[in-house]
Image (cartoon, rainbow, N blue to C red; front, side):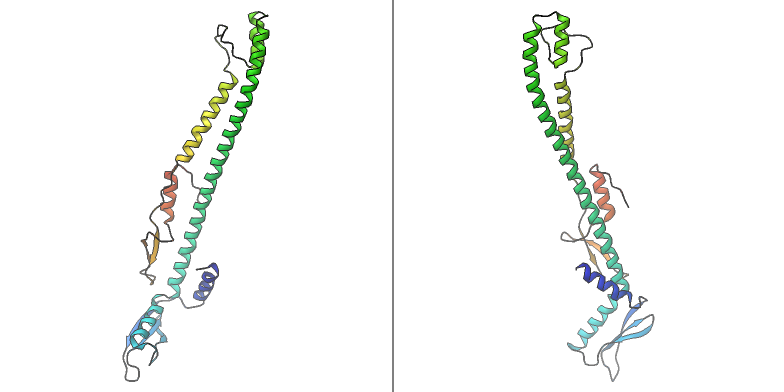
Length: 234
């Protein structure tokens, strides 16, 4: 049902008396097999004396009109509108999660590129430092190595020596990889699909249906939160 059809049905239902609708059958000499609909106890609709399809079909049509009255139609339209809003909210969460994963991948790729560039710089600097450092004292050798970020395994380690830049980059890359794994591991298990059943306002309810178009809002929110994703309710 399109949005235009839903709006037209809502406007039509809103114009009709939404009181208590009832269906009754009767038999008279001039109208055998008759039936009528009452609204708040007053007659509103009669079936024809000689209806197309016979009395049985005429009564069935009249009974359906009484069951699917304006109050039921408006209730179903409101429920459909709420389910559509919940569907839109779920899609928004999915899009946000996809953007989060994309940004994490971009950071990982940038970190890997930076590490590759730094590796090339470090290799060149290490070659220069080792070539020049052999002609200087240990103190100058260490200062030159620190300036260019070169590890000096040929010198005894200092107690408070700083962590090399490449090691820090590797730590960041490891953290990003872990973050991506956590995001990709998230699984949202949606609840059973639902479909409306019953036409009278006192009988309308939702039933499980593998091909249904609806989901229970609270069950969907619980499923999203169970996957570790925050949900902000408007």
